[in-house]
Length: 410
Image (cartoon, helix red, strand yellow):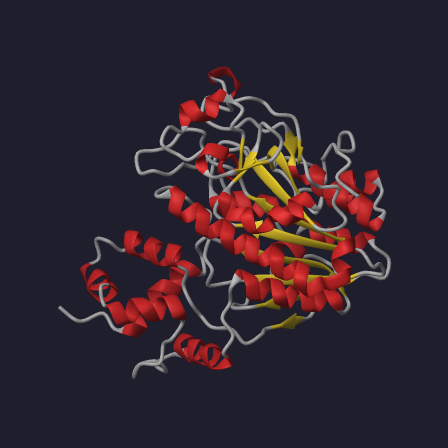
């Protein structure tokens, strides 16, 4: 039986990673300029982030009943927010922002996506900002591009850390230019684990994957072995490795801050690692710490411009209320929106809480959404850029009813 070479393994990893919904192998970054000093940063949390673990409604007895064994609330190490909600310790580094009113959350939110629970479809709808069956809906362009089309003097460009596809969220008629920074091709531990599960029954892959040196190369992007130049993908990996920059949430945020200090006023990038089907306690903590590092880097990099910035971190859907048999949670519906920045009227959890009783759950299993996450984004646009309600409901988010102003702007 032939050996599986390092080249073969990388190609399989790349084929999976560049198509997998939560993959860190391709990290699109999108930017737009506008005639304003206000700034908007949208972070897509790919993989379906568990809002119930992030902002824990420990005051609802249904949470403890459904998640026996999970650390919950202040007794489990979370920071009390308001006597009902508590913040996961993975975001403890952002506690000073909460105290300063520069951090807040909206709970029980979602896109219009329901029941299918596909990462790919859910993320497409999140970035397109539309819903199937709505007049003007399409997956061909994204809601940030449609916003740019409504702002006089605005233009957009797309920067790709790795890959050739632009970010859907800023794809559309507004003209663009492309740029690709030096980066290191690497897998996160979560994606490496995903590969091991996908190819568990492939004896050739499993034998090569068990090689500790190559596993390390996957994690750190160091493909410098003798077959590193055997095809175009290996050559690209070698070129990116020589660039010396590792793509991490912190490095993406640092680059975004540089652009936002210059002529960009809108930025978007993604952070993966939120698909916590198993071992959620370990995986969630690590993902949240990376998110905290990214937000902290944005704040540090923006300096005084932070006071006129709104950061919104959103996910394609939430996770089930109940724990599964592998210490994780499955694909669900309602989740939470993370907001930060000096433009935010923070220090609070926004939204109407639906409850976690048996009769309160969506489809008997998920957190019931009480507001469309797009409405919060739209109200942020209204506050930051003066966008009119009709423009937001008819053009930027076709078919959306903004509802009452949640008063998220400082």
